Image 1: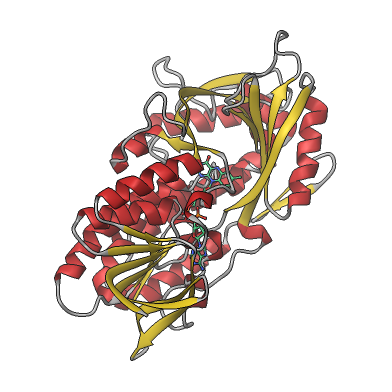
Image 2 (image 1 turned 60 degrees about the vertical axis):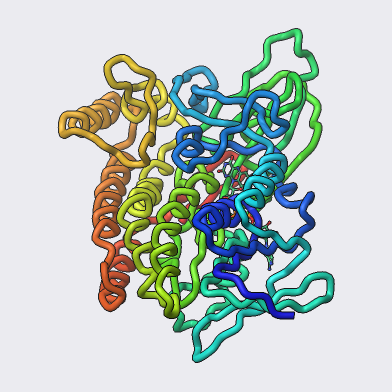
Length: 465
Ligand SMILES: Cc1cc2nc3c(=O)[nH]c(=O)nc-3n(C[C@H](O)[C@H](O)[C@H](O)COP(=O)(O)OP(=O)(O)OC[C@H]3O[C@@H](n4cnc5c(N)ncnc54)[C@H](O)[C@@H]3O)c2cc1C
């Protein structure tokens, strides 16, 4: 069986569904194929957080009061130091939802705008003509279907089902995500056993442990989440360390979830002839939180403009015609994320004692004019010279007071310097694919300077690359 479309998207997660919707609204014929059953997609995770301002930017009809997906809309978070006493309120606009309910609602929105889905339908292989992608083969309950399309999109999640099997010379890196390229996450949905007594509230982050208490739909309940690279065993050990010190009141575990989210630089190019990758398949997540959903929506908005122009022309949708997706993405959000990812190797070095000082001081979580600090608002450090000077003086003060070690402050400043360089380099992403190799060589040299961090928790040493 052969079917023809303008665009075939593999994966009906948040990335594929959103891009499919934008393109269907433009009047293109779009099919989104998904290996899972319609009602099963997204069930691997229950509750997740969206950055509220990004829902609006993406034009998604926001979840309203009474929608089964909506857990709540929140404006503030608390950062806790590892002494569990020092705290700082920060502003973080989040809409917390239940993923599967959200997807089910979006499927109807996409269909009402002309997009099509095929569930229980698994991508198996690409179809090439003259070494260029012209479609793909899929299997639906044993029936083989050929989807011929002008553009094939990989939105298959962390497996990168298409990206990782592209021919090596197709212009998109084919790496698979290894244990040090992801944050393994363990989540426990818990219910406080004595709700009449005081208990810790949700929206509490424990930065030193890369752990948090998040809101959920369970009455008197929260989610205890912890993320670490390397293995699930690493996460379990760090969680034990956290729980030993946190001394939370008694609770009952209602259910547990686990998964991993990319923690690596994305491929240098997201496009090839007749091909685009988005979402976890393209390794695009916020470096500081591992959140991926709304990060990719920003890419999809850029991609839709470029794809529309390319599809309006009659000839083949070549890599050159899609190149502006790379250009516009990497010169903007991609450059900011590259900088933040580089910066992490400075910040992660600080010890337990140093974090007690940093959370209590005004150095990292700075407020402007008495407002609650809002770190990473636009995902870049938009600082005046005066502010940079204040941070430098704050760090120096910490060293003089023996609250921060000179060694770790130097590592932070070095990482910040490199972050600035890599961000600037991405901001000069080549306009022309012919200049790409030279740009990649320079980017490789900068990334080689990113130093791994070895952090000693009581029961395990974690490596961050
Ligand atoms: C524990 C945990 C908590 C997280 N919390 C948050 C959060 O709070 N906020 C946030 O923004 N992000 C969060 N993330 C990250 C977020 O889940 C991902 O970035 C996001 O879901 C990626 O969406 P996607 O559409 O790219 O991939 P996916 O959601 O993985 O969707 C890919 C789809 O492709 C399908 N597929 C795969 N292979 C094939 C094939 N061969 N044929 C057909 N279909 C195929 C899969 O079945 C799947 O439905 C979290 C991740 C984890 C692990």
